Image 1 (cartoon, rainbow, N blue to C red):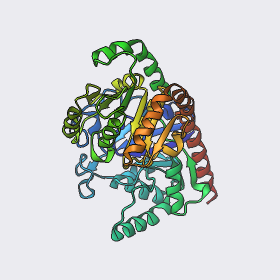
Image 2 (spheres, rainbow, N blue to C red):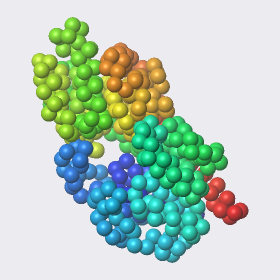
Image 3 (tube, helix red, strand yellow):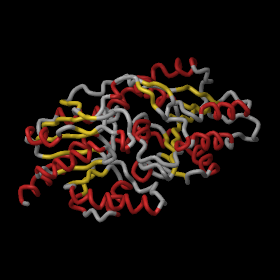
Image 4 (spheres, one colour):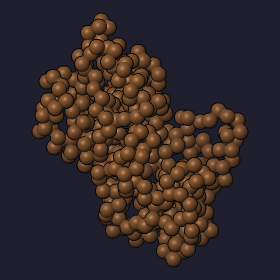
Length: 398
């Protein structure tokens, strides 16, 4: 059995099911350390612009602790972050075989890496960086390169989540033997089953939202903020009108909240159409029903490290449309098969992609459902074990 210490900022709704799956495996003894517990309570999300509280279990089914830290556990500015009091002592007493750290933007993550290095414990790193949005500021660029050139030699194995993440590590000279594909995945069984269970109530949900039977539905489910580009989606939707006056055949549903909502609602109202709905924030347990309801899911972001909503909706068997700045695009969107990839900000291309999705929604949905099975927790577990075995062997040889 491998003793594995995992360090991550806070309980995350996307990660909890994976941690439960790893903890259930008899070959891995997992202990999770969090730097903050803010996500367990109602908190003000700056993106949604409102207080939210997740309605799914975040810490059940695996061993965990909240690190004893100095400083604030809420803020993410580097000068306000928490600092752990004694990670080295914890790692030494725990007799861990490996340390797994998620990301490097928290000071506690760097503390864990340095402590593990000092104790000679091999380190695994998993993050979302994809090289899409690199700073153009010369000083910041040099600072980032200097920092990562200092950090990356300390890492025994990089658990890359997809093609663009792999390319990012390779751009820093990381060789093949240190790269392990641990795909970004969601609980496929949960989302597939929940969407299927929602089908029996689909007509009731349509009626509650005043949606006419038979009309297709385009869904957006994300924060209504600039980087997500919901305004591009609204503009592209208007191009689906046959004459610029009549409302398009499909409905457009916005699920989520954020700073752009008032502006978007005003623009939608100006069309005079009754086919655009703003449904506000929906919690995790409500999302599968929305996925089941739609025909085409759109993520038009100008920057998206991955986009796990695409994994989720593919389990419901839906066509997907994403911008070329969405990290999962090369891996999950099979161009012309289960969806389309369009150049970010190209309104006409987005409109054509949505039109394609509507016309091919049945076939595309089936491809989505089949393809996403290759991006699963079982794959994660298998590849994580491979990485653990290899870094343990290398540590013994060294």
